Each structure stands twice: as C-alpha cells, then as structure tokens.
Image (cartoon, rainbow, N blue to C red; front, side, top):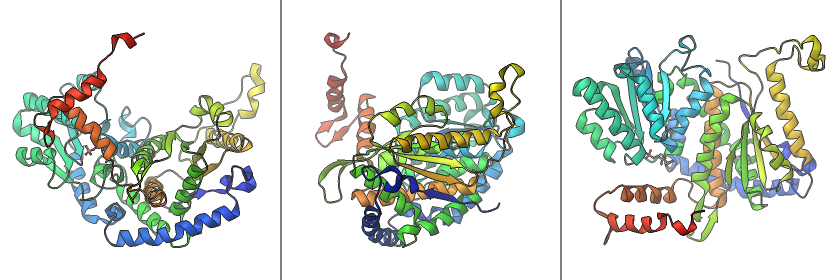
Length: 476
Ligand code: PA5
C-alpha cells in the first residue's frame, strides 16, 4: 500500500487569520512551544520507562500473530461476529469497521470478505431481542466476542449471560464453547474466571492499558482482522506516527502542537472541542475521540491533589449533515469552541453528479462534478464561514482513508491526549468517576456484600434510591 500521510493543518487558529482577540499570536505560539517542549522529553522518558504501555502496542508482534491465527481459524465458519463491550471495549471496533469497510458491509455479500459485524455497546432490550430474533438458528455460524478489560462491567456481563444460556440451550455445552471468545485481563476479573472455568478461547488485554487506549490491542484488532481489515497496515501507520509524535522539535511534532493548541483555547474560554469529519467513513472515529478526550481529561484533581475540575468538552458533529443542524450555533452562538475538521483529499470511490433536467437548468453548475468535490467544497465553505465569525479551526488532513492512515490518526490522538494530560497537569489514564457509576449499578441490582468496609451494598442502594425516587409533587 502506498504510504499516505495524516497531517495537522493549524494555520486557521492563528491571529493573522482570525484576529488577535481569538487567534493565537506568534508570541503565544512561542510560549506554547516553550511550555510543551519539556513535556515531549518527559513523555518520551515515561514511555521508555514502560509507564505508557499503549505506546508500544503497534510493535507487539505477538498480539498480531495471535489475532491473525485466530481470525484465520474462525473466518471459514463464521458468518456473523458479535462484539459485546462498552466504552473503550467497543468504540474502537465500531470506528475501525465504519472507517475501513464498505457502508453496505453487513448487507451485501459481495462487498464483504469476512463475517457481518454487530457491536452491541448498549443494553436496550428491544435492540438485542430484535437481533437475536433475526439470528434465529444461525447461532452455530456466529462468534460472540465478549470484551471487558476489568471483567466486571454489568452491561457486558448481562449480554454474555443471555447469549451463553441461549448457546447452551440450543447447541449444548461443547458447541457453546466453540462460539465464544472472551477478551479480558490475563488474571483479574470475573470474565477471566469464567473463561478459565468454562474453557472459552480467550485473548489477553496487555497490562496497564485502559479501555480507551486499547483499540490497537486484541480489543480492536480481533474484530478488524475477522472482518478483513488490514491490521498490519493499521499498525504500520501507528508506528510511523510514533516517530513523528516522539520528535523533540515542538514545531515538527503534530501531537504536541495539537495538544498545545487545544490547551491554549481551553484557557482562553473555548472549553468545547468540536470534531467534525467530512467523511462518513470517519464519523465513528469522532465518537472514539469523544470518549478518549472526555474520560482522559475530565478530572477533579490535578497531579498535586488540588481540586481543579478541569476538562474540555468534546462534541461530535458530521459534515455535511450537521451544517444543517449545528452551524447556526457554531457561527452566531458563543465563541467558546475550537473546531477540528477531518478532511479527505482523495476518495477511493467517487460518483459524478448527473445532468440537470431541462426544466431545472439552474442546477447545471453541479452537473458532471464529482460528489467528493461538493463534499470538500462544503467543508471549505463551512470553515470559511466559521473563520468569518472568528472561530478557530484545525484540520486533520487524510491523504486517503485506509488502514495505514487510520492507524496514524488513532496514534496521533492517543498521544495528543497524553500531551494534553501533561499540559493540564492531570492523570489522563484513570477514570474514577466512571467507576462510581459502575459500583452504584451493582448495588441497585442487588449485589450482596459490602460496598465499603462497614457499609453494605444494600445500604448504598437505599442511599441511591432515595435520590432516584420520583417525587409526585415535582411531576408536571
Ligand atoms: O476507557 C475505559 O476505561 C472505559 O471506558 C472502559 O473501557 C469501559 O468502562 C468498559 O470497561 P471494561 O472494558 O472493563 O468492561
């Protein structure tokens, strides 16, 4: 595959484009370079010291080999691959599938080289019930991949328990085993215990890698390899980006610049970060980014233990769709946002717009043009309109959308997140606030035992219920 690059274009956040009040002046950029440059050295050192193991995933040939071997073995007898997982155990899988497989992958056999893929990152009963109704007796041609790093997530556990029983009832214990793959920690968590006891095949998530940084591990690579995505190119893209984001020169390091610009605008009161892909294929990468950014940077305490309540709010929009729903606000509402467009230079497939009817010749200006030309001009037009309103705009430019560039993009934003964490002086790798919700769910669902020493889950549930109780007097 020819090497194509993903590049960050930052001219349109600068003061010479949108003015001194809202743009970054050359002096401010110089200050950002001075503040960020030592962090490049720090992150490189932390990485060499093994403190950020996600950075090494693209080099882990053991993972690739294991995933490829398993995919090779299963693809022949698998028509449907079902992923059960949530957050970091699902969003990467969805993003890779949308980015790299055709839109009609699941519906058109001729556009698919592997199984259909269904990722359930929700527990809406109607959704799963409709799916299982469609699946009917195709259970023996379906592989279920339950993914949970902690092994303790209620949603994934419930989905797994529903399907396990179904498989046991319909196929019996021996064949049930053939249809389930678990992806979890090597030692911890109940999913690990289940896999070991039941003898389910299992993929191990390497230690020290949080869900939202795990897409380039077995978490994202297995479904990708099963569904025909070139995981070698994906990882090669990530490795090549690694060289660029390790560069000690701030001005040559796209992750450092990206994080510094985001940090600057946050401090200038632009606390909302809108990612707006102008490519349907890239739309779920914006969802993946939303989790990465929100869960990593939204923190109560800084590294010194001060209460800071910090974190930019990531918003996803899709071009051109959201031009017709959001741009009114983006241009005329508060100037509190930084925009990051994703733009594709070359599309693998294009369609020419047909001629205008004789009686509607006013549309002749569109006739014969490529649809991609319209799409990219819409991006240009929206960016222009935002710049007219003094709104800062970054663009991540994809030469093409392929496994290699998507690998670059993923790695670029993972490392950008690490830089942003360092600039905000917070720990981007934990998620204590998510944990509380998980524990509260367990308590409400009747988990026995203590929530904390001297405080039972039952008591905890009562405390939650007193807040949840619908007050008839407040119902209107
Ligand atoms: O990034 C994270 O750590 C979270 O979003 C988790 O991925 C999510 O909560 C699911 O957790 P688990 O994989 O442990 O089931």
